[in-house]
Image (tube, rainbow, N blue to C red; front, side, top):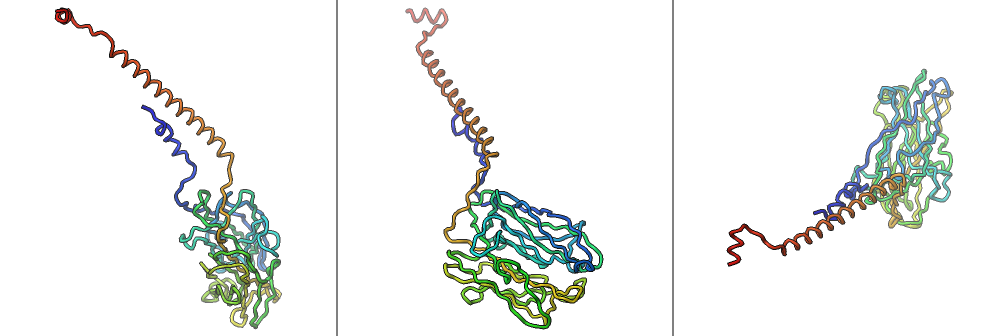
Length: 372
């Protein structure tokens, strides 16, 4: 006999979200092919600005890394004369802390190509939320160290969770920049040691810092993030081991370590960044006319706020309206099946009751025996 639980069993397979912990999916997206002029033209520099859609809507980003390649997929790096000078990605939605310029920076990298991994290698379910209405802008510079133009492909490797992400904590990025809340460039100097500092950032919430990533230009020897005057995260850039590793024969930064689980935040704490340069030890980048390239020193810190508002999944009516119609049809069919089953059972019971009171007719011998 049909029963309501059996009828509704198919609905379990139509449930759009699992209650299990969601695993991020990986996607590599291309954001343009660019021809970078030779070093003889504008010092081989190409400035890029573009507005793009996020890789997903109503999702949590857990990992991000910028790549620069040639058309054949090989790496475009200093050893081939191509340089990813820097890239900054900005979320164009409302700003989140006082003093910030329009837009919300959430990622920065140079030729070291540091990855943003909010999960600490999969150990901590944390993500940065993209809303369905968000738009992104990236600002960057590519530099060609050869005296012939080169064409390269810019792409980003993303990892993100669509849904469910109820098990994930929401992280908010905070930007520390020696240029303040505006231009990041600062003048360099030859054969000297000097330090630049960022403005102070004072939060008004409790939380934990899950990730700090930084970017520094050649000549830099140390980036430090301070909390109340004490070093919270100190990073020494890694330079190439030999000058032969780059097309211009100079030593360049090839890696910037990151800081994970960097400590607690509470209202009134004061955070700032310092970038230290030693151009006696490492030469800054030089233009064709002998002038020095400006330098940068930035960091982005991701903070998970205590008792912060949960990320609410936005309703996609294009999915839910057709799905709701299908569910309604199944419910109607299910109740119709149950009703038909009950009606059949009632008719069978009535027939059985009638049969119990019908006279029994046997053969002639049996009837004669009964008459005696």
